[in-house]
Length: 107
Image (cartoon, rainbow, N blue to C red; front, top):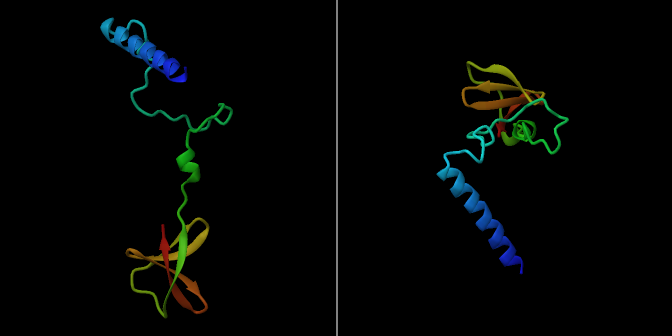
């Protein structure tokens, strides 16, 4: 019974799309179909809003390694990632720890 119901719903949807294509969009208005993602950021009152979820949940993680150096290489600059002050030297990152610098990984 369930499979027959799903088949009927799928057939109805396919028929609607076919008729819409045949009538060149007279049934489904063109503004109803969105061709690309258009997230509305700053609309917290929207029910079940997922706009900006990736922005809110994606964070850079700073992990310490077991590699220590006594001095930093030349050309390092201080940066702050997620409130953690570290040194960026080319593609490597270092954090001061106990008079030395530990290599950290930024993911």
